[in-house]
Length: 548
Image (cartoon, rainbow, N blue to C red; front, side):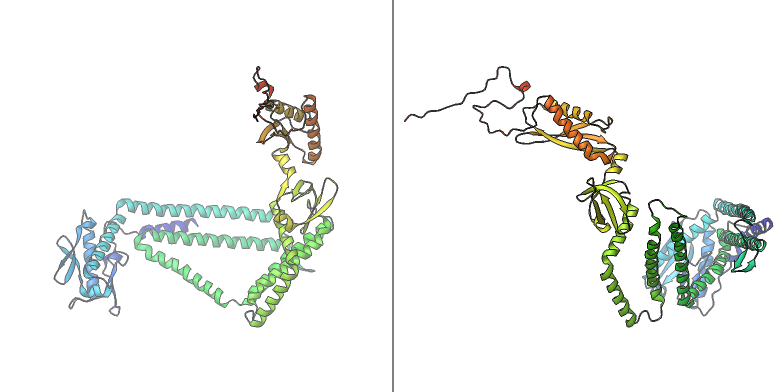
Protein backbone atom coordinates (compact mmCIF):
# COMPACT_ATOMS: atom_id res chain seq x y z
CA UNK A 1 0.00 0.00 0.00
CA UNK A 2 2.87 2.39 0.80
CA UNK A 3 4.46 1.65 -2.58
CA UNK A 4 1.19 2.46 -4.28
CA UNK A 5 1.05 5.86 -2.58
CA UNK A 6 4.67 6.67 -3.41
CA UNK A 7 4.08 5.67 -7.04
CA UNK A 8 1.06 7.98 -7.28
CA UNK A 9 3.01 10.86 -5.76
CA UNK A 10 5.93 10.38 -8.18
CA UNK A 11 3.52 10.24 -11.08
CA UNK A 12 2.12 13.63 -10.18
CA UNK A 13 5.48 15.21 -9.51
CA UNK A 14 6.69 14.11 -12.96
CA UNK A 15 3.46 15.42 -14.50
CA UNK A 16 4.31 18.97 -13.31
CA UNK A 17 5.83 21.08 -16.16
CA UNK A 18 9.58 21.48 -15.88
CA UNK A 19 9.36 25.24 -16.50
CA UNK A 20 6.62 27.02 -14.56
CA UNK A 21 7.50 30.45 -15.90
CA UNK A 22 6.14 29.72 -19.39
CA UNK A 23 3.25 27.72 -20.83
CA UNK A 24 3.75 23.98 -20.88
CA UNK A 25 3.98 21.89 -24.01
CA UNK A 26 0.28 21.09 -23.90
CA UNK A 27 -0.76 24.73 -23.88
CA UNK A 28 2.01 26.15 -26.11
CA UNK A 29 0.99 24.16 -29.15
CA UNK A 30 -1.62 25.80 -31.40
CA UNK A 31 -5.10 24.50 -30.88
CA UNK A 32 -6.18 22.62 -33.97
CA UNK A 33 -9.87 23.14 -34.64
CA UNK A 34 -11.64 21.02 -37.21
CA UNK A 35 -12.79 22.92 -40.26
CA UNK A 36 -16.33 21.71 -39.77
CA UNK A 37 -16.80 23.74 -36.57
CA UNK A 38 -18.80 26.94 -36.91
CA UNK A 39 -16.97 28.62 -34.04
CA UNK A 40 -13.22 28.74 -33.48
CA UNK A 41 -12.20 28.80 -29.80
CA UNK A 42 -9.35 31.01 -28.59
CA UNK A 43 -7.36 28.85 -26.13
CA UNK A 44 -4.03 30.48 -25.28
CA UNK A 45 -3.51 28.62 -22.02
CA UNK A 46 -5.88 26.07 -20.52
CA UNK A 47 -9.42 27.32 -20.97
CA UNK A 48 -11.34 28.83 -23.85
CA UNK A 49 -11.49 32.61 -23.55
CA UNK A 50 -14.00 33.32 -26.35
CA UNK A 51 -14.92 32.22 -29.87
CA UNK A 52 -14.17 33.69 -33.28
CA UNK A 53 -17.15 33.48 -35.65
CA UNK A 54 -16.14 35.49 -38.73
CA UNK A 55 -13.38 35.49 -41.34
CA UNK A 56 -11.30 38.51 -42.41
CA UNK A 57 -10.69 38.20 -46.12
CA UNK A 58 -8.86 34.94 -46.76
CA UNK A 59 -7.95 34.75 -43.05
CA UNK A 60 -10.38 32.10 -41.69
CA UNK A 61 -11.90 32.09 -38.20
CA UNK A 62 -9.73 29.08 -37.21
CA UNK A 63 -6.57 30.87 -38.36
CA UNK A 64 -7.60 34.04 -36.56
CA UNK A 65 -8.19 32.08 -33.33
CA UNK A 66 -4.78 30.38 -33.58
CA UNK A 67 -3.02 33.71 -34.28
CA UNK A 68 -4.79 35.46 -31.38
CA UNK A 69 -3.83 32.64 -28.98
CA UNK A 70 -0.18 32.85 -30.04
CA UNK A 71 -0.12 36.63 -29.55
CA UNK A 72 -1.73 36.35 -26.11
CA UNK A 73 0.95 33.84 -25.10
CA UNK A 74 3.61 36.22 -26.41
CA UNK A 75 2.18 39.08 -24.34
CA UNK A 76 2.11 36.84 -21.26
CA UNK A 77 5.91 36.46 -21.51
CA UNK A 78 6.45 40.23 -21.23
CA UNK A 79 7.91 41.34 -17.93
CA UNK A 80 6.09 43.99 -15.95
CA UNK A 81 2.80 43.25 -17.66
CA UNK A 82 -0.28 45.11 -16.40
CA UNK A 83 -3.79 44.49 -17.61
CA UNK A 84 -4.32 48.21 -18.25
CA UNK A 85 -1.48 48.07 -20.81
CA UNK A 86 -3.94 46.49 -23.25
CA UNK A 87 -5.86 49.12 -25.17
CA UNK A 88 -8.66 49.30 -27.72
CA UNK A 89 -7.90 51.42 -30.81
CA UNK A 90 -10.71 52.11 -33.30
CA UNK A 91 -10.01 53.24 -36.81
CA UNK A 92 -11.94 52.79 -40.02
CA UNK A 93 -14.38 49.90 -39.78
CA UNK A 94 -12.30 47.85 -37.33
CA UNK A 95 -11.47 48.05 -33.62
CA UNK A 96 -8.06 46.68 -32.67
CA UNK A 97 -6.90 45.36 -29.28
CA UNK A 98 -3.22 46.27 -28.94
CA UNK A 99 -0.41 45.85 -26.44
CA UNK A 100 2.22 48.46 -27.18
CA UNK A 101 3.11 48.00 -30.88
CA UNK A 102 1.65 44.50 -31.02
CA UNK A 103 -1.87 44.11 -32.43
CA UNK A 104 -3.39 41.17 -30.56
CA UNK A 105 -6.59 41.00 -32.60
CA UNK A 106 -9.09 43.04 -34.56
CA UNK A 107 -12.84 43.13 -33.98
CA UNK A 108 -14.92 43.60 -37.14
CA UNK A 109 -18.55 44.40 -37.72
CA UNK A 110 -19.08 40.73 -38.60
CA UNK A 111 -17.76 39.69 -35.16
CA UNK A 112 -20.05 42.19 -33.45
CA UNK A 113 -23.09 41.06 -35.48
CA UNK A 114 -22.40 37.41 -34.62
CA UNK A 115 -22.33 38.23 -30.87
CA UNK A 116 -25.25 40.68 -31.05
CA UNK A 117 -23.22 43.61 -29.67
CA UNK A 118 -21.69 46.80 -30.95
CA UNK A 119 -18.16 46.72 -32.26
CA UNK A 120 -16.61 48.83 -29.50
CA UNK A 121 -18.53 47.06 -26.74
CA UNK A 122 -17.35 43.66 -27.97
CA UNK A 123 -13.76 44.94 -28.29
CA UNK A 124 -13.74 46.23 -24.71
CA UNK A 125 -15.23 42.94 -23.51
CA UNK A 126 -12.46 40.94 -25.26
CA UNK A 127 -9.88 43.41 -23.90
CA UNK A 128 -11.04 42.70 -20.35
CA UNK A 129 -11.11 38.92 -20.91
CA UNK A 130 -7.59 38.88 -22.37
CA UNK A 131 -6.16 41.07 -19.59
CA UNK A 132 -7.69 38.95 -16.84
CA UNK A 133 -6.54 35.70 -18.51
CA UNK A 134 -2.93 36.89 -18.80
CA UNK A 135 -2.91 38.23 -15.25
CA UNK A 136 -4.34 34.96 -13.93
CA UNK A 137 -1.82 32.91 -15.94
CA UNK A 138 1.17 34.91 -14.67
CA UNK A 139 -0.14 34.68 -11.11
CA UNK A 140 -0.53 30.92 -11.31
CA UNK A 141 2.99 30.56 -12.72
CA UNK A 142 4.51 32.64 -9.92
CA UNK A 143 6.98 30.63 -7.84
CA UNK A 144 4.94 31.20 -4.68
CA UNK A 145 1.82 29.84 -6.33
CA UNK A 146 3.81 26.88 -7.68
CA UNK A 147 5.23 26.20 -4.21
CA UNK A 148 1.73 26.33 -2.81
CA UNK A 149 0.48 23.78 -5.35
CA UNK A 150 3.41 21.45 -4.68
CA UNK A 151 2.83 21.78 -0.93
CA UNK A 152 -0.84 21.03 -1.44
CA UNK A 153 -0.01 17.92 -3.46
CA UNK A 154 2.36 16.71 -0.76
CA UNK A 155 -0.28 17.42 1.88
CA UNK A 156 -2.88 15.38 -0.03
CA UNK A 157 -0.44 12.46 -0.30
CA UNK A 158 0.46 12.63 3.40
CA UNK A 159 -3.19 12.84 4.44
CA UNK A 160 -3.98 9.85 2.22
CA UNK A 161 -1.12 7.88 3.79
CA UNK A 162 -2.30 8.50 7.35
CA UNK A 163 -5.90 7.96 6.30
CA UNK A 164 -5.04 4.48 5.01
CA UNK A 165 -3.20 3.72 8.23
CA UNK A 166 -6.19 4.91 10.26
CA UNK A 167 -8.59 2.80 8.19
CA UNK A 168 -6.40 -0.30 8.58
CA UNK A 169 -6.07 0.21 12.33
CA UNK A 170 -9.81 0.78 12.73
CA UNK A 171 -10.75 -2.34 10.77
CA UNK A 172 -8.18 -4.44 12.64
CA UNK A 173 -9.92 -3.49 15.87
CA UNK A 174 -13.29 -4.28 14.35
CA UNK A 175 -12.05 -7.67 13.19
CA UNK A 176 -10.63 -8.40 16.65
CA UNK A 177 -13.92 -7.48 18.28
CA UNK A 178 -15.81 -9.74 15.86
CA UNK A 179 -13.58 -12.69 16.68
CA UNK A 180 -14.22 -12.17 20.40
CA UNK A 181 -17.97 -12.30 19.78
CA UNK A 182 -17.78 -15.77 18.26
CA UNK A 183 -19.88 -18.12 20.34
CA UNK A 184 -21.61 -15.33 22.28
CA UNK A 185 -23.20 -12.80 19.96
CA UNK A 186 -22.23 -14.58 16.74
CA UNK A 187 -23.98 -17.92 16.59
CA UNK A 188 -24.84 -20.44 13.96
CA UNK A 189 -27.44 -19.45 11.38
CA UNK A 190 -30.42 -21.79 11.33
CA UNK A 191 -33.53 -21.96 9.23
CA UNK A 192 -35.91 -23.82 11.50
CA UNK A 193 -34.07 -27.09 12.17
CA UNK A 194 -31.60 -26.71 9.28
CA UNK A 195 -28.15 -25.48 10.30
CA UNK A 196 -27.20 -23.18 7.43
CA UNK A 197 -23.85 -22.00 8.84
CA UNK A 198 -22.02 -22.85 12.04
CA UNK A 199 -20.29 -20.30 14.29
CA UNK A 200 -16.91 -20.65 12.55
CA UNK A 201 -18.27 -20.09 9.06
CA UNK A 202 -20.45 -17.22 10.20
CA UNK A 203 -17.45 -15.52 11.78
CA UNK A 204 -15.33 -16.02 8.66
CA UNK A 205 -18.10 -14.63 6.47
CA UNK A 206 -18.37 -11.51 8.64
CA UNK A 207 -14.59 -11.02 8.61
CA UNK A 208 -14.53 -11.44 4.84
CA UNK A 209 -17.26 -8.80 4.44
CA UNK A 210 -15.32 -6.46 6.74
CA UNK A 211 -12.18 -6.96 4.63
CA UNK A 212 -14.07 -6.22 1.41
CA UNK A 213 -15.52 -3.06 2.96
CA UNK A 214 -12.01 -2.00 4.03
CA UNK A 215 -10.64 -2.47 0.51
CA UNK A 216 -13.57 -0.55 -0.98
CA UNK A 217 -13.09 2.37 1.40
CA UNK A 218 -9.34 2.50 0.73
CA UNK A 219 -9.94 2.35 -3.03
CA UNK A 220 -12.46 5.18 -2.82
CA UNK A 221 -10.10 7.36 -0.78
CA UNK A 222 -7.21 6.62 -3.16
CA UNK A 223 -9.37 7.48 -6.16
CA UNK A 224 -10.40 10.76 -4.57
CA UNK A 225 -6.83 11.60 -3.59
CA UNK A 226 -5.46 10.85 -7.08
CA UNK A 227 -8.17 12.98 -8.65
CA UNK A 228 -7.43 15.83 -6.24
CA UNK A 229 -3.71 15.58 -6.99
CA UNK A 230 -4.35 15.84 -10.72
CA UNK A 231 -6.65 18.84 -10.17
CA UNK A 232 -3.92 20.74 -8.27
CA UNK A 233 -1.81 21.39 -11.38
CA UNK A 234 -3.32 23.09 -14.45
CA UNK A 235 -1.60 20.79 -17.02
CA UNK A 236 -3.22 17.71 -15.45
CA UNK A 237 -6.64 19.12 -14.73
CA UNK A 238 -7.98 17.55 -17.88
CA UNK A 239 -7.03 14.14 -16.45
CA UNK A 240 -8.78 15.03 -13.20
CA UNK A 241 -11.91 15.97 -15.12
CA UNK A 242 -11.80 12.62 -16.89
CA UNK A 243 -11.37 10.76 -13.61
CA UNK A 244 -14.32 12.60 -12.13
CA UNK A 245 -16.27 11.83 -15.27
CA UNK A 246 -15.50 8.11 -14.94
CA UNK A 247 -17.38 8.16 -11.64
CA UNK A 248 -20.00 10.82 -12.20
CA UNK A 249 -21.24 9.64 -15.57
CA UNK A 250 -21.89 6.03 -14.49
CA UNK A 251 -23.47 7.26 -11.26
CA UNK A 252 -25.77 9.54 -13.20
CA UNK A 253 -26.75 6.72 -15.53
CA UNK A 254 -27.35 4.36 -12.61
CA UNK A 255 -29.50 6.88 -10.80
CA UNK A 256 -31.53 7.59 -13.90
CA UNK A 257 -31.96 3.88 -14.46
CA UNK A 258 -33.04 3.34 -10.86
CA UNK A 259 -35.57 6.15 -11.06
CA UNK A 260 -36.85 5.05 -14.44
CA UNK A 261 -36.77 1.26 -14.46
CA UNK A 262 -37.26 -0.06 -10.91
CA UNK A 263 -40.83 -1.45 -10.77
CA UNK A 264 -43.24 -0.07 -8.22
CA UNK A 265 -43.71 -3.60 -6.93
CA UNK A 266 -40.25 -3.53 -5.37
CA UNK A 267 -41.16 -0.35 -3.51
CA UNK A 268 -44.35 -1.95 -2.23
CA UNK A 269 -42.48 -5.06 -1.05
CA UNK A 270 -39.93 -2.94 0.83
CA UNK A 271 -42.66 -0.91 2.52
CA UNK A 272 -44.57 -4.03 3.54
CA UNK A 273 -41.43 -5.68 4.96
CA UNK A 274 -40.52 -2.59 6.98
CA UNK A 275 -43.97 -2.30 8.51
CA UNK A 276 -44.19 -6.04 9.09
CA UNK A 277 -41.00 -6.18 11.14
CA UNK A 278 -41.92 -2.98 12.94
CA UNK A 279 -45.27 -4.43 14.00
CA UNK A 280 -43.59 -7.69 14.97
CA UNK A 281 -41.21 -5.79 17.24
CA UNK A 282 -44.10 -3.88 18.84
CA UNK A 283 -45.94 -7.16 19.43
CA UNK A 284 -42.90 -8.59 21.18
CA UNK A 285 -42.71 -5.63 23.58
CA UNK A 286 -46.47 -5.75 24.18
CA UNK A 287 -46.29 -9.45 25.12
CA UNK A 288 -43.35 -8.83 27.46
CA UNK A 289 -45.21 -5.99 29.20
CA UNK A 290 -48.42 -8.01 29.40
CA UNK A 291 -46.63 -10.96 31.03
CA UNK A 292 -44.83 -8.69 33.51
CA UNK A 293 -41.32 -9.44 32.27
CA UNK A 294 -40.88 -5.85 31.16
CA UNK A 295 -42.07 -2.97 33.30
CA UNK A 296 -42.34 0.65 32.25
CA UNK A 297 -42.94 3.28 34.89
CA UNK A 298 -46.39 4.78 34.51
CA UNK A 299 -47.45 2.15 31.95
CA UNK A 300 -49.73 -0.59 33.25
CA UNK A 301 -49.54 -4.17 32.00
CA UNK A 302 -53.22 -4.27 31.04
CA UNK A 303 -52.58 -1.37 28.65
CA UNK A 304 -50.15 -3.43 26.56
CA UNK A 305 -52.53 -5.31 24.24
CA UNK A 306 -55.05 -2.46 23.67
CA UNK A 307 -52.20 -0.04 22.97
CA UNK A 308 -50.61 -2.56 20.61
CA UNK A 309 -53.91 -2.98 18.75
CA UNK A 310 -54.35 0.78 18.37
CA UNK A 311 -50.78 1.31 17.16
CA UNK A 312 -51.02 -1.69 14.81
CA UNK A 313 -54.23 -0.32 13.27
CA UNK A 314 -52.65 3.10 12.80
CA UNK A 315 -49.53 1.57 11.26
CA UNK A 316 -51.56 -0.52 8.81
CA UNK A 317 -53.58 2.56 7.86
CA UNK A 318 -50.39 4.55 7.35
CA UNK A 319 -48.85 1.71 5.34
CA UNK A 320 -51.87 1.69 3.04
CA UNK A 321 -51.55 5.46 2.56
CA UNK A 322 -47.87 5.07 1.65
CA UNK A 323 -48.51 2.16 -0.74
CA UNK A 324 -51.60 3.65 -2.36
CA UNK A 325 -49.77 5.82 -4.98
CA UNK A 326 -47.84 2.75 -6.18
CA UNK A 327 -50.92 0.59 -6.69
CA UNK A 328 -52.00 0.03 -10.30
CA UNK A 329 -54.94 2.21 -11.18
CA UNK A 330 -54.54 4.39 -8.10
CA UNK A 331 -55.18 7.43 -10.25
CA UNK A 332 -58.46 6.14 -11.67
CA UNK A 333 -61.81 7.70 -10.77
CA UNK A 334 -62.97 4.49 -9.05
CA UNK A 335 -60.05 4.51 -6.61
CA UNK A 336 -60.49 8.20 -5.99
CA UNK A 337 -64.20 7.83 -5.23
CA UNK A 338 -63.68 4.90 -2.85
CA UNK A 339 -60.83 6.62 -1.02
CA UNK A 340 -62.83 9.82 -0.59
CA UNK A 341 -65.85 7.86 0.72
CA UNK A 342 -63.72 5.93 3.22
CA UNK A 343 -62.00 9.12 4.34
CA UNK A 344 -65.28 10.95 4.93
CA UNK A 345 -66.78 8.04 6.88
CA UNK A 346 -63.64 7.65 8.98
CA UNK A 347 -63.35 11.37 9.73
CA UNK A 348 -67.05 11.78 10.65
CA UNK A 349 -67.16 8.68 12.80
CA UNK A 350 -63.95 9.09 14.77
CA UNK A 351 -62.93 12.75 14.68
CA UNK A 352 -63.42 13.24 18.44
CA UNK A 353 -61.58 10.01 19.28
CA UNK A 354 -58.61 10.92 17.10
CA UNK A 355 -58.63 14.41 18.59
CA UNK A 356 -58.39 12.98 22.11
CA UNK A 357 -55.69 10.50 21.13
CA UNK A 358 -53.57 13.19 19.47
CA UNK A 359 -54.10 15.50 22.42
CA UNK A 360 -53.01 12.73 24.78
CA UNK A 361 -49.89 12.17 22.69
CA UNK A 362 -49.06 15.87 22.76
CA UNK A 363 -49.61 16.02 26.52
CA UNK A 364 -47.27 13.06 26.98
CA UNK A 365 -44.39 14.87 25.29
CA UNK A 366 -45.25 18.32 26.71
CA UNK A 367 -45.17 16.91 30.26
CA UNK A 368 -47.40 19.59 31.82
CA UNK A 369 -48.10 17.26 34.75
CA UNK A 370 -47.60 13.71 35.99
CA UNK A 371 -49.59 11.31 38.11
CA UNK A 372 -49.81 12.61 41.70
CA UNK A 373 -49.41 16.30 40.87
CA UNK A 374 -51.83 18.86 42.32
CA UNK A 375 -53.09 20.77 39.28
CA UNK A 376 -55.86 23.10 38.19
CA UNK A 377 -57.63 22.70 34.85
CA UNK A 378 -60.32 25.27 34.26
CA UNK A 379 -62.31 25.33 37.52
CA UNK A 380 -61.20 21.85 38.63
CA UNK A 381 -58.47 21.58 41.27
CA UNK A 382 -57.15 18.22 42.42
CA UNK A 383 -54.50 15.53 42.12
CA UNK A 384 -53.91 13.56 38.94
CA UNK A 385 -54.70 9.89 39.56
CA UNK A 386 -54.63 8.50 36.02
CA UNK A 387 -53.50 9.44 32.51
CA UNK A 388 -54.68 7.53 29.45
CA UNK A 389 -54.41 8.20 25.72
CA UNK A 390 -58.00 9.45 25.79
CA UNK A 391 -58.73 11.08 29.17
CA UNK A 392 -57.14 12.33 32.38
CA UNK A 393 -58.68 11.64 35.78
CA UNK A 394 -58.39 14.04 38.72
CA UNK A 395 -59.38 13.58 42.38
CA UNK A 396 -60.43 16.85 44.05
CA UNK A 397 -59.84 17.66 47.74
CA UNK A 398 -63.48 16.59 48.28
CA UNK A 399 -62.64 13.10 46.91
CA UNK A 400 -64.55 13.76 43.71
CA UNK A 401 -63.17 11.98 40.64
CA UNK A 402 -63.33 14.19 37.57
CA UNK A 403 -62.69 12.76 34.08
CA UNK A 404 -61.48 15.34 31.56
CA UNK A 405 -60.99 14.50 27.85
CA UNK A 406 -57.47 15.22 26.67
CA UNK A 407 -58.78 17.54 23.98
CA UNK A 408 -60.39 19.62 26.74
CA UNK A 409 -57.08 19.85 28.58
CA UNK A 410 -55.36 21.08 25.42
CA UNK A 411 -57.99 23.80 25.04
CA UNK A 412 -57.78 24.97 28.68
CA UNK A 413 -55.12 26.52 30.90
CA UNK A 414 -53.31 24.08 33.17
CA UNK A 415 -51.73 25.12 36.49
CA UNK A 416 -49.25 22.69 38.07
CA UNK A 417 -48.94 23.60 41.74
CA UNK A 418 -46.74 20.62 42.67
CA UNK A 419 -44.08 21.40 40.06
CA UNK A 420 -44.04 25.07 41.05
CA UNK A 421 -43.75 24.21 44.75
CA UNK A 422 -40.87 21.77 44.20
CA UNK A 423 -38.87 23.86 41.74
CA UNK A 424 -39.63 27.51 42.47
CA UNK A 425 -41.47 27.44 45.87
CA UNK A 426 -45.19 28.11 45.47
CA UNK A 427 -46.51 31.49 46.68
CA UNK A 428 -49.91 31.57 48.40
CA UNK A 429 -51.61 34.90 49.04
CA UNK A 430 -54.72 36.27 50.64
CA UNK A 431 -56.09 39.82 50.87
CA UNK A 432 -57.54 41.83 53.77
CA UNK A 433 -58.87 45.39 53.87
CA UNK A 434 -58.62 48.04 56.59
CA UNK A 435 -59.74 51.64 56.86
CA UNK A 436 -57.35 54.51 56.56
CA UNK A 437 -57.49 55.11 60.30
CA UNK A 438 -55.40 51.95 60.84
CA UNK A 439 -51.66 52.66 60.25
CA UNK A 440 -50.35 50.65 57.33
CA UNK A 441 -47.07 49.82 59.10
CA UNK A 442 -49.01 48.15 61.89
CA UNK A 443 -51.02 46.17 59.36
CA UNK A 444 -47.82 44.95 57.68
CA UNK A 445 -46.34 43.92 61.00
CA UNK A 446 -49.44 42.02 62.09
CA UNK A 447 -49.81 40.22 58.75
CA UNK A 448 -46.17 39.08 58.85
CA UNK A 449 -46.72 37.88 62.43
CA UNK A 450 -49.73 35.86 61.29
CA UNK A 451 -47.59 34.29 58.54
CA UNK A 452 -44.93 33.33 61.08
CA UNK A 453 -47.52 31.55 63.22
CA UNK A 454 -48.82 29.54 60.26
CA UNK A 455 -47.45 26.00 59.96
CA UNK A 456 -45.87 24.62 56.73
CA UNK A 457 -44.78 28.14 55.71
CA UNK A 458 -41.13 28.42 54.65
CA UNK A 459 -38.92 30.74 56.67
CA UNK A 460 -36.79 31.42 53.61
CA UNK A 461 -37.76 33.11 51.38
CA UNK A 462 -39.52 35.31 53.91
CA UNK A 463 -43.21 36.25 53.67
CA UNK A 464 -43.94 39.72 52.31
CA UNK A 465 -46.86 42.14 52.05
CA UNK A 466 -48.15 44.10 49.07
CA UNK A 467 -50.60 47.00 49.18
CA UNK A 468 -52.54 46.31 46.01
CA UNK A 469 -55.16 49.09 46.04
CA UNK A 470 -56.37 52.27 47.73
CA UNK A 471 -60.17 52.29 47.47
CA UNK A 472 -62.67 54.91 48.61
CA UNK A 473 -63.07 53.55 52.14
CA UNK A 474 -60.13 51.19 52.72
CA UNK A 475 -56.67 50.04 51.66
CA UNK A 476 -56.13 46.49 50.32
CA UNK A 477 -53.27 44.46 51.83
CA UNK A 478 -51.98 41.19 50.36
CA UNK A 479 -49.95 38.76 52.46
CA UNK A 480 -47.72 36.37 50.45
CA UNK A 481 -46.14 33.21 51.85
CA UNK A 482 -43.90 30.49 50.37
CA UNK A 483 -44.76 26.79 50.67
CA UNK A 484 -43.26 23.57 49.34
CA UNK A 485 -46.12 21.09 49.80
CA UNK A 486 -48.85 21.87 47.30
CA UNK A 487 -51.14 19.14 48.66
CA UNK A 488 -51.60 21.16 51.88
CA UNK A 489 -52.75 24.35 50.17
CA UNK A 490 -56.27 24.26 51.65
CA UNK A 491 -54.98 23.56 55.20
CA UNK A 492 -52.38 26.34 54.96
CA UNK A 493 -54.96 28.86 53.70
CA UNK A 494 -57.28 27.99 56.58
CA UNK A 495 -54.50 28.20 59.15
CA UNK A 496 -53.30 31.54 57.76
CA UNK A 497 -56.78 33.07 57.90
CA UNK A 498 -57.20 31.94 61.51
CA UNK A 499 -53.94 33.53 62.57
CA UNK A 500 -54.83 36.77 60.79
CA UNK A 501 -57.98 36.96 62.87
CA UNK A 502 -56.05 36.22 66.06
CA UNK A 503 -53.28 38.78 65.62
CA UNK A 504 -55.62 41.64 64.70
CA UNK A 505 -58.03 40.88 67.52
CA UNK A 506 -55.09 40.77 69.94
CA UNK A 507 -54.05 44.20 68.64
CA UNK A 508 -57.56 45.53 69.18
CA UNK A 509 -58.22 46.10 65.48
CA UNK A 510 -61.59 45.13 64.08
CA UNK A 511 -61.74 43.24 60.82
CA UNK A 512 -64.59 45.51 59.78
CA UNK A 513 -64.21 48.32 57.32
CA UNK A 514 -66.55 51.28 58.01
CA UNK A 515 -68.09 53.17 55.15
CA UNK A 516 -68.04 56.87 55.84
CA UNK A 517 -70.64 59.48 55.01
CA UNK A 518 -68.90 62.44 56.66
CA UNK A 519 -69.11 66.19 56.49
CA UNK A 520 -65.90 68.16 56.85
CA UNK A 521 -67.40 70.82 59.14
CA UNK A 522 -68.59 68.50 61.86
CA UNK A 523 -66.82 65.12 61.60
CA UNK A 524 -63.56 63.94 63.10
CA UNK A 525 -60.74 63.27 60.61
CA UNK A 526 -60.05 59.65 59.63
CA UNK A 527 -56.26 60.08 59.72
CA UNK A 528 -54.38 57.80 62.12
CA UNK A 529 -53.67 59.45 65.50
CA UNK A 530 -49.93 59.71 64.82
CA UNK A 531 -50.65 62.00 61.87
CA UNK A 532 -53.22 64.19 63.72
CA UNK A 533 -51.80 67.44 65.27
CA UNK A 534 -51.83 67.52 69.11
CA UNK A 535 -53.95 70.67 69.19
CA UNK A 536 -56.50 69.25 66.75
CA UNK A 537 -60.14 69.73 67.73
CA UNK A 538 -63.12 68.29 66.05
CA UNK A 539 -64.73 71.18 64.20
CA UNK A 540 -68.24 72.31 65.09
CA UNK A 541 -71.14 72.35 62.71
CA UNK A 542 -71.74 75.60 60.94
CA UNK A 543 -75.37 76.60 61.17
CA UNK A 544 -76.75 79.56 59.34
CA UNK A 545 -80.14 81.08 60.11
CA UNK A 546 -81.90 83.14 57.58
CA UNK A 547 -83.96 86.06 58.80
CA UNK A 548 -87.61 85.93 57.85
